[in-house]
Structures are given as structure tokens and as C-alpha cells.
Image (cartoon, rainbow, N blue to C red; front, side, top):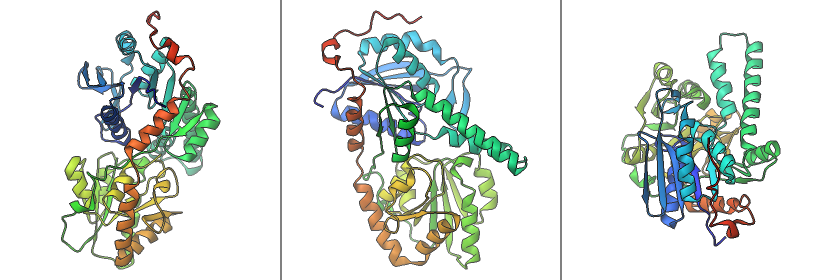
Length: 404
């Protein structure tokens, strides 16, 4: 496609520390490198607009009514107050495509404006909100008997999934990070669905940044320390290693969240760094020996790619997107169940030769993943959402539409 559409990208996260924010920042950087016309709209510390090269950035400040949905994310129910202001900016920008990343305050505003201004809408799925809701509810009501609790959890997951897919039906094209989700969204929305994977920054994350000299075996975890990440399973790993006679190992937990205090009280030998960024994060990855990611809910697993790029083999579950990132037996293991997960950690810990081979394979696999390739495929998917009359109507922005 030689013509590049003018893209207005409304993301749930940009400044935060999570996979959506990372992908959004990389998309912004891609548009700058390629000099594509790009409007990046997200929440920020103040409301302001700036243009640099081909990219215009619009940040919108959340108000006092905003409430937390994550440790570093909020939802402003009054975000709709920006509709006229943002509509004017969209007209001036002459957006051909409006791309949203989920049902956040910013995403809901964008979906409304796409409809009112008749701009084709593309929606990318980044987070399994239905599974998050179910796991958090399970934790909140764990005092209930198993039968009623399981029924409540299942009903919550199914109803949340139904609501999310109704929202994604608004889009002409949907994007998802793994093939299972592509098929699910295509079936439930009836819209064309395509892969939108993630890339790897192999310059930032590299085994060359390893500077640890002690003889401990370090089991690492990076991400939100929350129930949906299944982080309490790390305690089961530690218990199993101790029972099998292992002594010289420790955990390195990077991130923050509601489960951090419980883990600190129940892990015997663990370092908690909180959130790390940049070079500090890259060094921490490189100083790990294996990356343990017990989540069952992740749609992709950016942290898994960062570990592989750092030359660290990963052990993941057979649920969700991370399993697609691991060449099981080569760059890590995909564990079918809890016992298999523990067995994989123990095998890497016991076999220095296997660890050395996996470190090389992990790095090589990460080198094959390119952010530019990811976003080139996104622009190819945009073709499916563009009207056939785009070229003839290009000079006629929808300025006649009034936002009330």
C-alpha cells in the first residue's frame, strides 16, 4: 500500500508501565521514523497539544472524578467533556482511520467520535478484561463455598466477555495479539480480524548487560504483582525447589501491585525492586537465569520477549498468548500444568548445559521479532477498513458534522 492513511490513535495507556503503554510508545516511535501522519491521543498530566514532524500528540488531563482501575491507571467517567475539543482536532487533522485499544475513558470517547464524524474505526484487543474481572472477583469473594464462587466467577467472565465483544463490534476491523484471540473476535464480532503482535528491542535488552558474579540461580518475574498474573504460584515453585534439595536460588520480583505484600511475607528468599525502567530494567533481566511467568490471562507477554532478548529462557503456561513466544525445549518451556511448570524450572536449574543452549536460542528468537514488522502489518490491516472512495473524498473532511 503506497498510500499511508492519516491515523488517529487513541490508547488506554501511554505513560504507564504495562504492555499497552509499551506498544503505544513503540507505535508512536514507528510513525516518527517513517514520517507517517499520526495523531496520538492519550491521558496525561495536563491537557496540551504539540506537533513534532509528522506526529501530533494530544494529551488530556483526567479530572477529580477519575478513579483507579490499576495501580497506575485511572478511569474518568466525565472524560466526555472533551468531545467537542477532540472533534475539532480530528477535523483539522483529517483522520482517515481512528484506532482504539480498549474500552477505557479515552477509547469510549474515540468510539463515539468515530461514529459521529464517520471515521472508520479499528480496534485492537490488548487485555483479557473478562479473565481479569473473574480472577479479581474470585479473590474478593474467596470466603464463599467453592460451588457458588465458581458459578459467580464463570458468570462474571462470560458477561464481561460479552460486553467487551459488543464494544469491539463497533469497529470495521479488529486486531489481536495471538491467533486464538483473532479467531474468537472474528467469530463473536463478525468483523475481519488480524494479528497485531509485539516486537523486541534487542538493543535495550541484551545479555551483554549481565553484571552479576555470584553463584545463585535467579528466578525472575516482571509485571504487575496482581491476582490475574497468578503470582502466588511463585511460592509453590520455591516450596518445591526447597523440598527437592535446592538451596542456592532466589527470586527477583520486578513490579508492584496488590499481591506484593503477600509474596514478601511468603517467599523465603526474594528481592522486590518495585517498578524498574530503562537500563535498570535491562540489567535486571540480564542478571536472571530463568524467567517464570505463571500468568494464564496474558494475551501476548511483552515481558517474555524482553526476557528472551536478554538471553533468559522463559517458562510459561499453556494458557493465553505467551505460549506462542516460546519454542518449548529450545528457548524455554511451555508447561501444561503446575507440576510441569515446576519440573521445567527445576530442569533448567539442574542442567547448566541446557541453560547455556537456551540462553542462545532465546536471544536468537527475540532477534527475529521486529516492531517495524508489527506495525507494517497493522497498516496492511487498515486497508480493510478504508472506504474505496478514500482517494476522491480525501480533501473533504467531515467538518459539516456537529458534535453536541
